[in-house]
Image 1 (cartoon, rainbow, N blue to C red):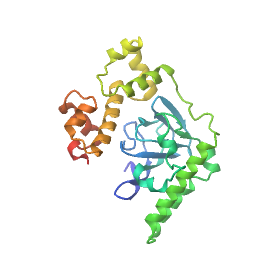
Image 2 (image 1 turned 180 degrees about the vertical axis):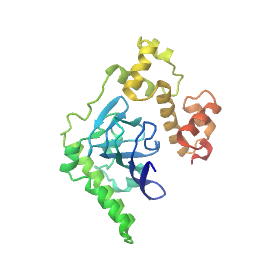
Image 3 (image 1 turned 45 degrees about the vertical axis):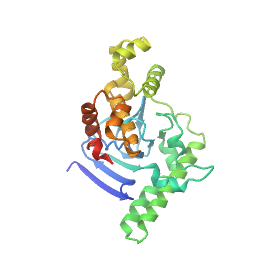
Image 4 (image 1 turned 180 degrees about the horizontal axis):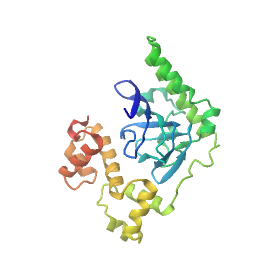
Length: 280
């Protein structure tokens, strides 16, 4: 078997801890893209370049990536060496009751622009002894303690507080480093503001006076996604939000910029694995 996976899930999937060892990684083998979830990604071993929006991070073992559910992201493998990572998927609702006035556990997940404050280097993770929380979570799961779920949950909450403290310490001068291109960021901002209107390469070419072929190549190299893929994933992320608010699938199709329901259905099912009507 090429992969060994350990999974811990709480509260009907609102929190999932996943440790995965991949022996012969390929670029089509990457973690599931769970659009409704926030993520904490921790590299245990391997050679990985992690793409978040227009930024690209060459990770070292012990590095961490934090992501909200609006950020396009994907790891790429820099070699075929053994690759192990820990990923925590969680919904905002899972820890919302721990926040109070004046302090939000998810402040750096929610109050940042896409593609910022994603990377936490191993040096800071080690200083905060943040990786200890992963061991605690696994130990609590194995313990069989009657309060193991609660112990796992509190270990995770402590981790979020530590992440807030690390970022708030302002010791991340390279937090926004990566393969940065101001023009692409400008276009990404435009796409996100006009997501529900017709968006084509011709439109981008005319709006930004940029050759569509050059733009397509640059966009793919900077984001890891084609122009069409990026728009589709962004629209489906918004569709999921609207479906959770109980908007009918037909209305969601129109509200998210799809030309017709057939195309919306096809793209939605390809990305999420289920139909719009069966998602909730």
